[in-house]
Length: 367
Image 1 (tube, rainbow, N blue to C red):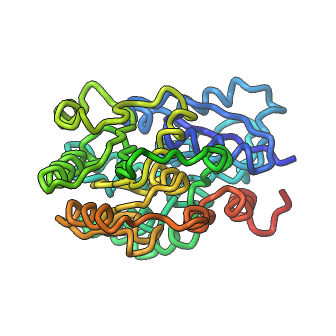
Image 2: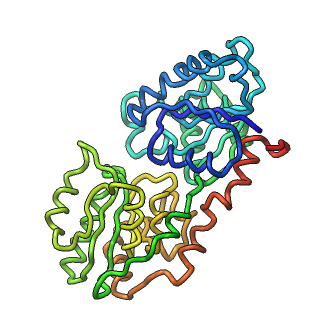
Image 3: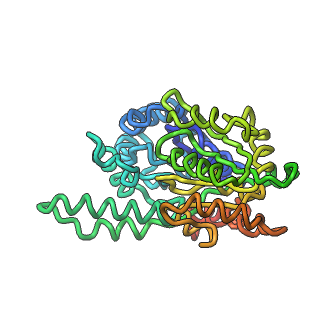
């Protein structure tokens, strides 16, 4: 059986979810080296060196792997250089990078001191990898655009062939979603057919919660009734609008805060009728796909990764969230029987696993 070494410096959230599904659906012998999901800047700078030290500590016969899979928090250029100096290391071992995100596309980050350093790590990791996969076309194109912009900023160092080299080894592979538990949940109708609106994102500014709660305020002032479920991970620095909204909409709230378990999270999704995103950045959107699979009608911004994932009837233009929400509620729009499954099935691991097998081992390789 093929052996794959996974190097993940940010083992949490969507990164962990992805690796859990990969191990469940792609047959291989896995060796995992991971670090906690915190301090991403330090991980990008030092994780490659730390991982090589862990590999050195392995018995030589256990160092043999067919592929190494890295996330974008690994500096693959440093990793490859250090591994090539390791006695007995097979320099033909495939090294692959999965781009959950890229440092060029975060809102406002390019103006932050030192940001170009981290974007540069992504760029050199792409060059040093044997194969690259992006979780969405938006992610890939924003990365390419960022690289081209960065290269133009260095007019005395022309590198005309570099982007073609990166493009040739790049592909789009959506992260697989495990639907079995979601499909086993019963839809929970609410009394009096009052629609339930769901928010299930991280409580951070890049998810733009202020716009979400502002739209709810417009609905309330318009006399449109609704109930509210707010999920997602909170932080000590979470925006103040959450505590304000918990007081303002207290009579409408069915749940407000992080779910105690994944099963409770899915139970709450199954109570929903509508799921909303106001994200300023989103490279894929697993939480939306989970909510849609659970039966929620998605209301999503007409940008980022969403246009490639969902039909235009589920997208709203800038400044039109409250209007779109009101229209969906007053018209009683909802997914037809079976529509949740047909909309999301292409994101399931069963549908995606052959693509991952080809990517990991190469199209002419036998798993």
